[in-house]
Length: 504
Image (cartoon, rainbow, N blue to C red; front, side, top):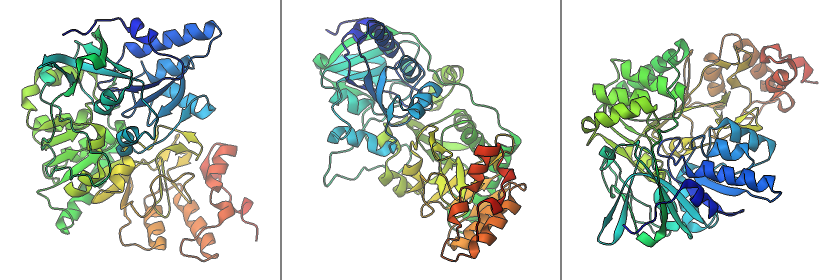
């Protein structure tokens, strides 16, 4: 191959202030890890010399600390989209130092192709292998894809490839890379089974589009999941009971159960608890991220097959998977995020979604992004893609946080990502609120019943007060955020006094 081998610093030297950079991978899985720290080092040197240097970053979802963390720490990011879990860049969002666009992941690649995001100057992709076939370059990706195919083809100045020898070439054949057609009148995306293959196992480009190869040997930056707790175990059992009841009622075909699960230790633990429940039949997964518990369940045969956008597991577990990769062939596929999160496919497969809420209000609206309505946590990610299109859309959350000082069930969400119209059920450690077919008042009663016992009287009192004002959804608008305001002033929502807010 006539492609130069370069250093990360040489790649960073080509990048200029104001450039747009597309980064491959999905979460820390499959994300490049050498060039972005070199860009951060360049930014630091430019700032010390009194010159401006900031770049714009678009990724498949969140990304590793070597990108978001290092660049944010040296104030080297101007705009960022569409999702991140890094604490350093979260500070930058909430201080206004980074202009952040929160975006549904299913829209990300399409926005790039339409030019809505802006022109992509450079692409940075991680690969486990690169091959030249008939004068074309085939790029074999690693543990996550994200928007790698789109940015590889769209990067107008070229693509840098980090050839990471830490990842095994045994991954070849585990990817299904397919890009959605441009509007309008697109052809159907013909996925009718979770691991049906419709694309190719590689990205193909011309050699001149690749500016250089940086050889690395670095593990992904995913961390091990926090162990399950009594709360997550209870949530998992309630979710399992709810799914089983839906099967008994004929709402779900027990032979065609397909689950999606969100990101994080809580979601990982809940899915593990579901797999451990004997009454839940063996099931399939179609999701954006696979964590440790689903992979355990694949090994045990509880998960029949799984389609994902990334393998977000610890380096130790990922190496174990590579050693045993043949046990997963035909049962596991890694896809681009626009396919893992595609509304068309989610609706066609009849997926039951399991996502995590920050807070839920008594009428079923869900906040999954902003603390107290103002401070960005991570972003909406793919939760709306699944919630709006799933056959059964469920959110889970512990009933309280901060040692009981904050209730996850509140009178009115301080920010709404998912309206009541798409939310079918809420699960806490105290049970399930099935919201389907219920009136607004019935939803309120069901949700208060699964709130923490410390907060049920407070929420019932609010509902009684609000009923005086009539309407379809009962609210006292000047008291709707009283629990949030009490926490802000006193540090504990339980100290709310409705009389402070209601003036007759």
